[in-house]
Length: 295
Image (cartoon, rainbow, N blue to C red; front, side, top):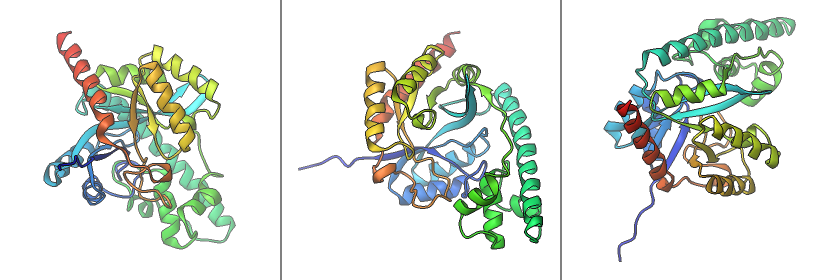
């Protein structure tokens, strides 16, 4: 008797065009080895790696969905993460906005590196040059790239230690998009807007429901139900809430390639992400593209 083999996906992966460890080509090959059929490369405030990922996907029989992860602000909540799927990565207006954020992020991370070097000087250790950090970066440097430079120097034993000992104390505040503007921009370029790892915004379920409800009124399409930040009971809560509210459900590991014990294609507890979540997402994208063509 014939049985259907499940296909697995991961809709939240980072490349070294933002703060990931691997190139889009490497991510695709790793996805293939992990038995995934569809991935989304969703770099922070950058779409520079999407084309490379799609090309590599064609060669490796992996579908790569164009995506981005934006750092946004909602009311008093800062560093909320918003995923955009199926976006037009060639839109000039969107790219100019991303470039502006990338430039501000570059200045921020250079400031962080200067603060880290001040701490190293206090410890009688040699400073880390920007060139040592750029070895690990492509489109823009991020804190994980500084962490890897610290690790390469032998100043720390793990990336986690680098953050706890240097990067968190030396942090410089980010600049954020207002989330309603970011949602409108994602929808303008044909995309679907999804709130990433919602429990990172608030662990209080009543408060989180109120936040998601308010965002839905501004155009939020869905929530990342299955992820590595939520516990199993929290993911079940998010799943039920999405069903009751008519929100799309997505799933992603938030894989950067530097996290201890975190695997591509898997969420907390080792759960795998079925491609069953993709049909509603692709239907919404198709509807949105038709709406834009009719304007």
